[in-house]
Image (cartoon, rainbow, N blue to C red; front, side):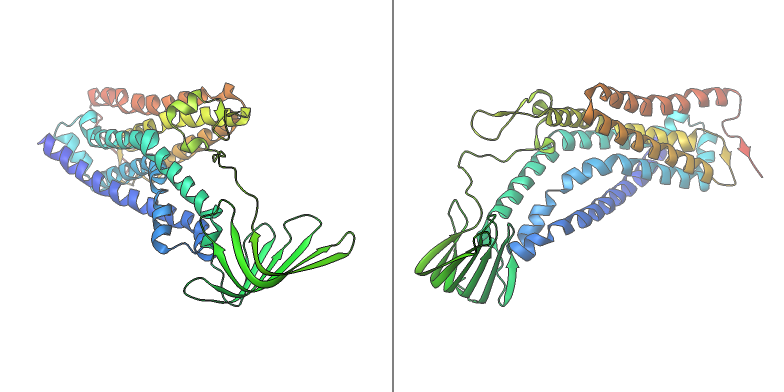
Length: 382
């Protein structure tokens, strides 16, 4: 019978867990995806590639959402069981505090295992792929959407205007205003043009036009007529330059051992600030899966840690949510302090240990004594 009750509670918890996790992850994905709409507007990114790019953010969202989803669903399901008097009936059948909490702890263990896989392997790999795709797209000027009859700002003080663009990406009546170089204002006009693909430096090839250059300091004005001219956008990128990978992209081993940046040949020593960020990120990845268990115990202690009150569990739920919010605020504050000094870093595992030990102590020994006193199924209130 107890196994059937355990499966019954676990089924409700699992369904709720899936719904809450999916809902929160989609909400986060939608809010964060709006930041990359400019890649569609200004870079001509296809919807399929946009969805592929932003979907790489989901593992990182799941990693953060899982502990909160466990807390939310355990609090909701056990409150429903208490409101429907099912907990009173279960206790009357002889179910111990451990029997009642077992389904939630099984769910927390599964969430912890999934969170481990996400935080240690899946999320860093997906963030790395996302950053590489984003870097490639932002550096590739050939994906620019040069709208007909509109001025397109492509950054670094460069504005491009075209009157027409055909299916073969041939541009007609091209005007380029370049103020990227201090002390110079350059304007290029041409009858035809086309973006050059596959080059190390972003270029646009122009035919039949002129290049005007004005120096505000000397008021010197020069004009050059050309039959063929190639305009460059921005600086070239050396072939040996490698994009700097931030803490979220690196493996756990790199976070605890890396001392040089992987940009350029031979490596450049990391700044002290980057080293601190790496160490904090590494500790967070190890502790984040444990939060699923801690939050489950906190929710259980909030709802099972006292006698049933027929007036409702509103105050108890509010207090439990308040403790969770305080924990999150404390963890965020310690993260910021550890980013400035690693002396504060040991406070993170200490805080997570408190999240697990204190609710577990309140949940089990207290109720064993209450049961021995014959109060485990007592009712307060009227």
